[in-house]
Amino acid sequence: MALQLHEHKAVIDILMEVPDLQQLDARVAALAALGYEAKGEFGIPGRRYFRLDNAGGVRTSVAMAYGMLKARLAREFATDPNAYMDGKDDFIKEHEAKALHWRSP
Image (tube, rainbow, N blue to C red):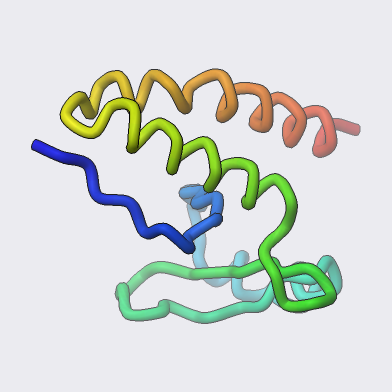
């Protein structure tokens, strides 16, 4: 099975669960103040989708770096989805740690 990659998708997808969508919806303005665009359910009932672009309307540099990594891994491991996933692991863990550090008081 070959992996399919959207060549121009330099996006980091983050999935989070919240116990109460109404509480999240009440914070849309706060997320907008950070630069996130609220897209609502965006085609999936019960979901909330937020997008973050830079001032020029381009995805952030981390997203571009992640997209480049995914493109390289897709070429290297076109028939090995497990190796593709393993190749993303360090990048994901590094940026997750940075996000948790940023969030901590």
